[in-house]
Image (tube, rainbow, N blue to C red; front, side, top):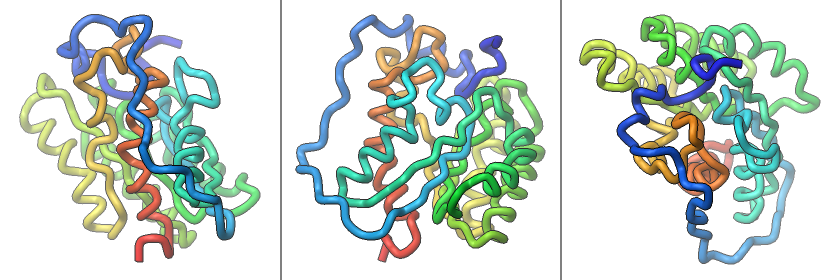
Length: 229
């Protein structure tokens, strides 16, 4: 599998981060809050995305969905997070497999975390195409009465101001149009920290994933139906 078909932030976007990650990156800061007892009915979450969710370069138990499930359960939420990440997926590929993936679930998820678009960037696909595919996926999920947490990406500046404006704007615009929750830029906590990026300068390390979970677990909890209020 060639790197250019992997997710998620283009190498040119991360090149400014410096040299490859050291062998022993610092551990992510652990929460000072004690674990809460897991209570209530099981909350089904589907993490639908590309290699950021699939767990490229890390052990299965270190993937974002696995770590997210553990973090939510530590907060007392009886979460079950299914990993539907496929390395290399564009929004078009995700759109093609979404219905099949949903139909294959033993129970309908309450929430889908929709994380796609990085591979569209790697291939410099038109932002309007990315937007169309994401919109179709959101519509499919809402048709099935499934809540959505949309996870955004950002374009590298070398693609030009017009492209950057169109791409970066599509995530908040879609969130507003469809009334879904939004994480504006998934890699915000780590994109400028090379010690949390694998030597390929594309994928987060296990510690990088810990940082992503710490930064987004509250967004996921609040996006679960009936949890926010």
